[in-house]
Image (cartoon, rainbow, N blue to C red; front, side, top):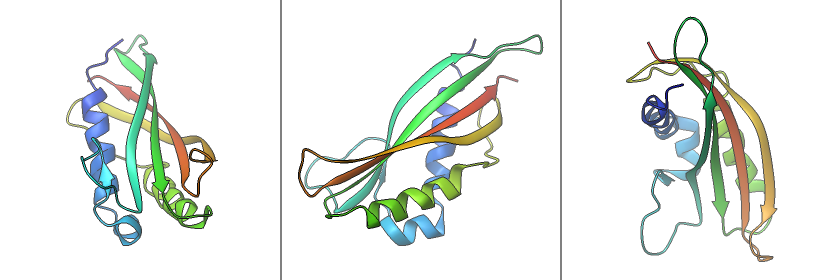
Length: 136
C-alpha cells in the first residue's frame, strides 16, 4: 500500500473544484481545505474526512480512497445546498484528474447524506467519492 498519493489526490480534487466555472457561480471562492477563522460565508464547501485502504496488486502499489466533501449553508431548506452538491458531483464524478504523484484510475460518486445542522435552519450535505490511485 502507499499513502504517498493522498496529498496529490487532495490537491487535484481541490484544484478541480476551485477552477470549475459552474461551481464558482454558486459559491465563488468559498471552497476550503482548511476553514478560515472568523465569520463563515452563507454557503461554502469544505474538504473533509478521508479513509484509505490498500489496493496494491501485482502491477504495483495502490490505494482506494474514500473522500468526503461537505456543502454547508445557513440558508433554510435544501435547495441551495443541493444545487452546490450537484455541481460538485458534476465536476468530480468520472473526472480524469492529473496527480503530481501517481495515477488516478477512477473517481466516482459513492453516496451523499443531507441533514439539518443542530436542528436549526442550517443544512449540510456530505458527499462521498471513491478514488482508486496507483503509485507509478
